[in-house]
Amino acid sequence: MKPPPELVKPVRRIAMLGGESSGKTTLARALAERLGAPWVPEYGRQRWEELRQTLSVADLVQVARTQIDWEQAPVARHPDWIVCDTTPLTTLQYCLHDHGHAPPELQAMARRAYDVSVVCQPDFDFVQDGCRRDDRFRQQQHAWTLVRLAEMGVTPLVVRGSVEARLAQVLAHLGQHLGQRNASIRASRHG
Image 1 (tube, rainbow, N blue to C red):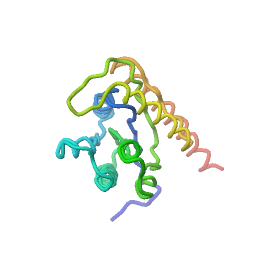
Image 2: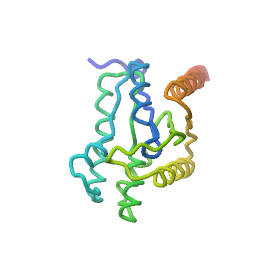
Image 3: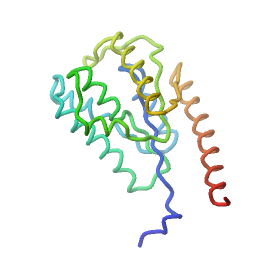
């Protein structure tokens, strides 16, 4: 028997965005651990490691679909938060960069809404792991992400510094986010 809709709490998704080697995965894992939340890894990286070549447009559309599927899997367990290591917006960026165009389906998936969007500032040395491009590309990704979020009307939390500093910034933001959200819920119930 399903609980009444008013008793089912919505799952909130936290998106980690930014350029390659900007600390997204490290922060996502640390945040998920701190929140006791599921961590959704980056499927695009896994797919690239399987193929070791530039992903085709069709591959990138499938990457975005799979990323969304992975995000929805923890919803069945009704956690408070889900920490997403990336979003289809990043997949769109790779598609546009590598192929010069993106199909409408991928563009639509890239507009997927997240409750909190965190952009990791590339404020430390670039680390080449055999999968990444270079620091110039990282800086371009960072700038592109900020522009696209602004176009979508999303004001991201841009985090800087050490992992601990970034984690503290996100946790403080989540506290503010929850306070505003709970006030809106109370107002709508009494309005």
